[in-house]
Image 1 (tube, rainbow, N blue to C red):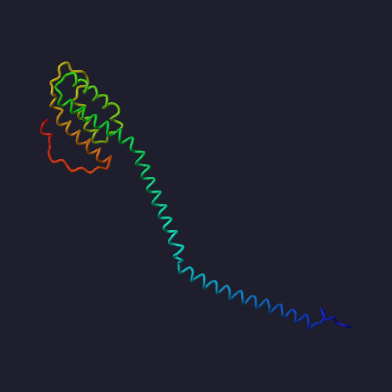
Image 2: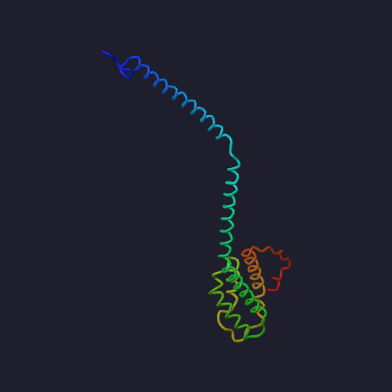
Length: 193
């Protein structure tokens, strides 16, 4: 029986098989060398940063963070401003009203100030006052007559000390609310009770 040159010759088949095994083995060796080389390059990359890429990203994130913080801070302050303006208006109004009650000698103006005091006391001032202003208002509420006085003894000097203390509480509240730093007051006018 004759063997063809292409296939059934045992030497040729064995030779083709050997060549494909050798090729496969060579491919495995090359793949292993490539994997080891990549592992070495990867560990080198893991230990050294590419700063030309990293620094711009860090700066971008920091800039974004600062921008978000500033926006939220400014927005919070803008949201507070209408309340603070109304607070300032009302506390100045009550301080002026109590000063009128303490110093005015005209009975009609005094009565209007008394009515205004109680309107602010029971209404809008309660919305914006802090504990110190509230405490001074309660103290004043014990002194200011709740109903009309036919012939008040004017000026009502018993209100001078409490009026002064209320003015200081209003000053402190305003300074804290608006983040204003004013020098401390040295004179004490509460001796005139």
